[in-house]
Image 1: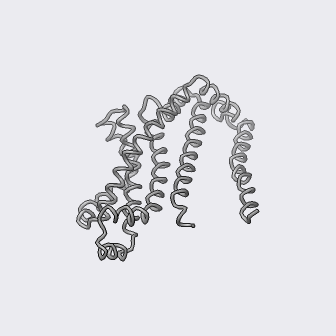
Image 2: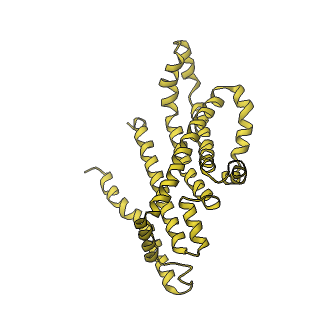
Image 3: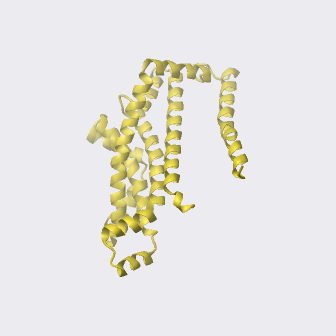
Length: 256
């Protein structure tokens, strides 16, 4: 047994401590009578609502709608971010022309673009996909830029001396050197995009987890709202863990 085994055995129980403590505090606060049960719904009632939504198929429909928007918007934003980040990193002229505007827009919260996108795209699918693509684009572009600029210049000089072809330069030098930074940016973009999507669905949508929560609010069904909070948190956690596992697997060579 390695030295890491005892530590790994303690990790799982410790990771459950905070969620269990939060559930206990939630239950105690609900039973204290300080807040009406219509305002602070007990965890058991939220679990019952989740089961009812899952059994009726409504929860599955909302989750599938949200995940479809997330997947398509993320793919578009990631491809655009990779291309743009590589462009301004490899070309001083492109950096001078585009980087100032990019960095200025980067400071604006993505959710602030919602009114403009709604005006041009309405509240149908293109709007939700566009807001996810926008939320994905900036972290991926910035990570790609930093990753390429972090490659030592000496590597390019050696490649020039040996007259390395452009495809080989990209595949053998740029890609391996920038993969860790780019994957980190893509992981950050994924969780950021999920948060932005749920917020956008709260503001303007006719389906999805955010819309389910908004309908619950309008009907004063706090149990539905809290069920949506739980589901969005679990999905966000799963997305982050999945992306982190892929990142770790793709960069194992760094620790070999």
